[in-house]
Image (tube, rainbow, N blue to C red; front, top):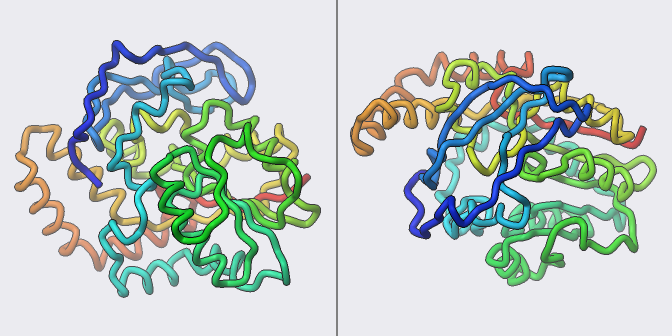
Amino acid sequence: MIGKVEEIVELKDIQFETTICNNCGSAANQLLVTGQDRLHQIPGQFTNVRCSNCSLVYMNPRPVEEKNHLFYPMVYGPHRPQATKKPSRKFWSWLNDRLWRHTINRLYAAPAPEAELLEIGCGAGDFLLEAKRLGWQVTGTEVSKTAVHHARKLGLSIHEGTLDTFPRDKKYDAIRLHFVLEHVHDPTKMLQEIRNLLKPGGFAHVAVPNENSTAFRWWRSYWYDLDMPRHLYLFSPQTFEALCVKSGLRLEKTVGEVKLDVFWNSFLFWLQGVGLSAPIAAFLRKLLFGITLPVAIPCGWALGKKNKTSRLHFVVSKD
């Protein structure tokens, strides 16, 4: 959802901290991009830097962990149940399956009897519900009280809180982090926890924004997946693999997600940034999206093959 948030967030109520690189520990960095919250229009300017040593991109300074929740309004999309979102059209579902999603779907299609799946940051439980129908024994974690409430209404087992407070009484055949890692203050610790929770022979599926994408290089501070100030880290295939190595995980597969909306939502942000009204900007976005579709689909497919799409999916296992 793109639009102004109704809740009022004052930056004076939020403490910020400077930090060092989560991968190599270096304090040396270079300014990469300065931007604002274009999705929910929370006031303020935020800065992403690139580590001068290992190239990991992170927000610096960043909100302290105890106050980070203030940047997630009630209308934040991943915390809402699927029924309240705009339904995806059959054509796009069919197209996505053929462009990239079939590779990911195969991971979950045929679970072994009693196979256990954990989703960290499960939102309102839409994926877990589908996985349960496929035969998985499912468990989720989620920090949003609203999302937990919706997920539990579906009959799902959900732990409310962070992974730090999650029980360690079992291990899992599969663990899913769907655009979660970029939100946490310590992604290395998160990946290490995943390794500890995986059964031998298990896998984790981690999806993240790709700062090495063509869309980011094109749109910069207007890039939809920059999502300041909620995205504390941005990854590339190289920096994500470096974190995996540090965490005792082995990268098995990389899949580029072909998501045309990311490019055109970035275009919408740019139009609004240069002063066009929201209705005119939305009209131009819709018009050009349709006109360019025959070219955009094969371009997206080609970028996916080169891991240059805005979003990447990684499959990892214990080292």
